[in-house]
Image (cartoon, rainbow, N blue to C red):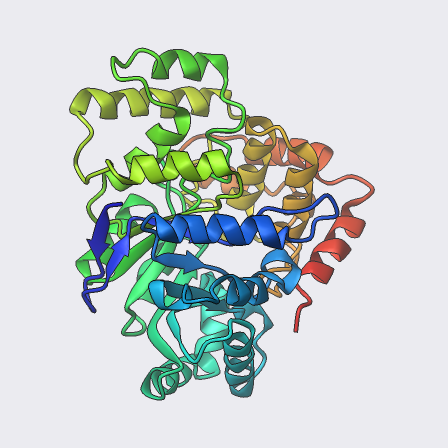
Length: 399
């Protein structure tokens, strides 16, 4: 296992972190505790020392599971990361209530890496007004948390503003070879590193989209390389090639996946890909973009929409519908992410579009946005949309 140092505290963290959002599960969807515990402990025994969870994962059962899985001496071998559910916070008192509940769930007296969950600009503004900075300062001072950070899901300009708003120790961003210009992107990665923040990477495989069902035309490009690698290895190595990255999270729930990821994490040094290999990744990126239904890069020049449509997110979910083999799952995610469930904000569905055309004038990709939004409505909304939103609200209702 290779390790990289957290800039501000010197912690030597395994470059591979164990993500507990997609744990091994039984047929009814509940956590298969026996199998998942063996998997977590196997990863730790083979060098993983960073384990990440959150309040809503597995309908609120991930944190208690992890508390049990880290018994028998395993707690002392790892750094635990979990997250304040920012979207559920209504008062300053709520922050302490959730943190104290999480300490109990995790059966620990401190959380090593504590994040504000799912930050976007508006959500950050809301909890900043509730004095979240004071909460973090006091929780660090009394030892309940050791390092303070945030996970980010908004636009690049929001990312820099949040980075500059508090003396963070680290941050967590979505990053992979398709998201260089999406959300925080490469610019955000480099900006965070310039501020001496450790950077934790989520979704290195884009939720498995880059590895589950790989189009043959993409496989053909990968196969051109003299050194044969799986799509998983290409995706992970590309992220780890960036020296600014500290830890890459992987939601490992298959024993074979754990073995493969551990092997790659023994070899993936920063700046180890050749220029020819980097060019190969660029060709794969271009091919994926050809396969996507819309060429949106997530630049957000089209925003804000006067009618309240989250255009980039609508397009992201629309593309995902054609890149993965789980249409039902993507339709659920569309309802959850665009329905205001996670952020406790207003719905941002494509169907809110009033065809004003103002976005078209701003789009550097020259996308006929209103027309594409009509296709999003047709394929991702439908008569069961309200039912999917209700299911998502139930999922995030954990208190």
